[in-house]
Every structure is written in C-alpha cells, then in structure tokens.
Image (tube, rainbow, N blue to C red; front, side, top):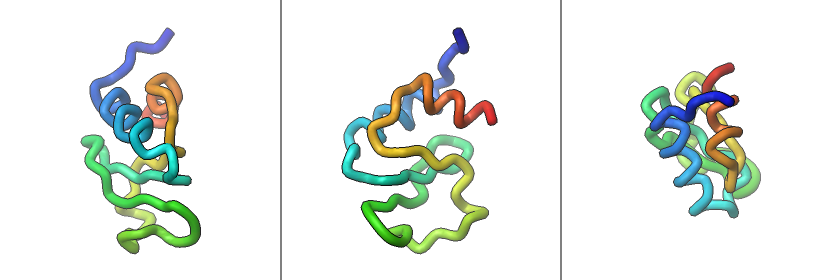
Length: 69
C-alpha cells in the first residue's frame, strides 16, 4: 500500500466536497487552479497550469496514484 501524501489527502478532501465537478485541477502544492462542471474550465486555465487533474469525489488513494504518475 502506498503512503498518502498530505497533498493527496488535501486534494481528496476538496474533491469530496465538490463531487459535482467533473474535473478539478491543482498545482504541485495541491492548490486549486481550476475546475469543470461541464464544458470548459471555469477559470480558463492553460494546460501547463493544471499539473494534477482529478475527478470530483475521488479517494485519497486514487489521488495519490495520479500524483505518482
């Protein structure tokens, strides 16, 4: 089992609160950059700004797998 980083836990907690978001983008520190509910990114972020992208309501273990990629 992979140890969970604090960033993975932080991202998963945010994603759990926003299960209506279809995608959520974060920087390397786990700071939210942008999100989607449908269609385009709400803040109009660029691909290079979205370091980690996860689905809404994702588990911390699944987030850690994204971070480890």
